[in-house]
Image 1 (tube, helix red, strand yellow):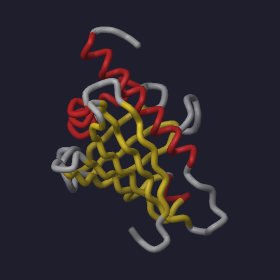
Image 2 (cartoon, rainbow, N blue to C red; image 1 turned 90 degrees about the vertical axis):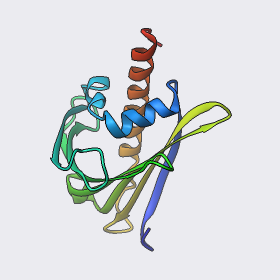
Image 3 (cartoon, rainbow, N blue to C red; image 1 turned 90 degrees about the horizontal axis):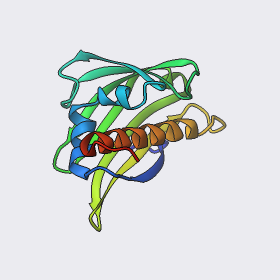
Image 4 (tube, rainbow, N blue to C red; image 1 turned 30 degrees about the vertical axis):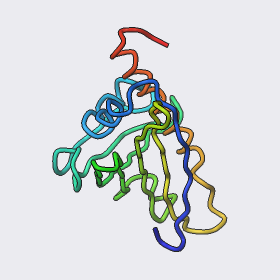
Length: 159
């Protein structure tokens, strides 16, 4: 992390098993579109398989349902041993607002309950630039919707 890098983070409790959520996060990211079609419209793979380290993919999404569409093009870094996935911005709308931007997802268990730690690691162009709180809220809601989708799919129920 560079000297100027900042970080926002949140731990999200999961309904679905941690291993299943991690598998979806790394190997089945297309389910984000199914889980939250109002916010995620497309996922395109540009290099690699989209799931292994070095793959390049882009997302088309709206931070708020019905809002302006944005593009986030990322390079994927996967750490299977620590159940961590990084999505490093290589282009897109977010890099118009921040010098650098990276999402880090770490899935873990605590006292028999699954969690995903979401971290936004970023550098501002200027100290007066806004914190990416709206992106933290957007991603938190997206992860919760995807967890609910996975839980319902596994159980054949809704909650």
